[in-house]
Amino acid sequence: MITVLGLPFDRNSSYRRGPAAAPVHIRQAFHSDSSNRWTENGIALGSLPQWQILDELQSLDRERAFEQIESAVSETLGAKARLISLGGDHSVTYPILRAYGKQYPDLSMLQLDAHPDLYDEFDGNRYSHACPFARIMEENLAKRLVQVGIRTLTGHQREQAQRFGVEVIEMRGISRADQIVFNGPVYLSLDMDCLDPAFAPGVSHHEPGGMSTRDVLNIIQNLRGKLVGADIVEFNPERDLHGMTAMVAGKLLKEIMGKMMEES
Ligand code: MN
Ligand code: MN
Image (tube, rainbow, N blue to C red; front, top):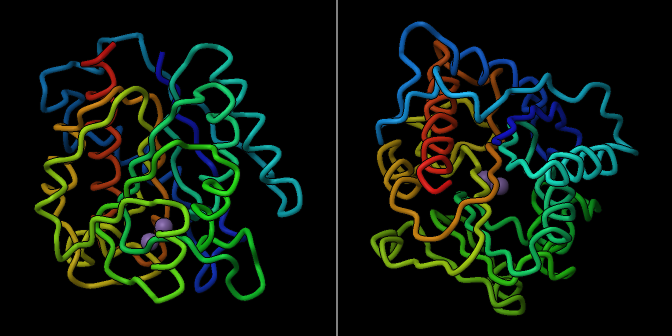
């Protein structure tokens, strides 16, 4: 079973709010009659019972949000389902991984992002959306972290990447992404700003020089390893144009589901 769950939380965004509203827009795009429910690898999602979209978590307050997210994810994994979460700023990946780390001790992570999100702290907040992968690596919640699409490395974050043994494939060396091979379970953390703003304008941090939608689809479809979970974060509907980023997120959701079903 694949469970899709919305996480309406953006209180750890450093620059703009908005990703809390993402889940409903992604669900609408996914269900839109402008397309169909077939994945590119030939799976007819519409006629299959192996997935469900839950109502999004409600009333995530800032103090307890991480606990609420971790326990909701633990519940899903305990029921032997694989989770795809929608929305939220990127800080939500830390509590998600706290639940995943317990279930999968040999977990690898693939992060698609313009930013490494490895700051020790940002604006005095250790749980900022600029910090989740520092927390994840400190707590050994993943045995391996591969980042792809990065184009904003600072000196501090280069040091952090070295300290934690993070494998960084910068955008300027993106062709190396074809060579990644994972052994065992893989978790995909997909920050919508990995895409070039031309393809996905609905994000808080426009960082030019990013991936095309097809680049991201190629990475998902050709992923070597067993995909056991994923998040789609940082979509900010307030910045979107004609719902185009919502449609990209909906398409990515569909293809992530297709990839997971191909393996099961
Ligand atoms: Mn991020
Ligand atoms: Mn980012």
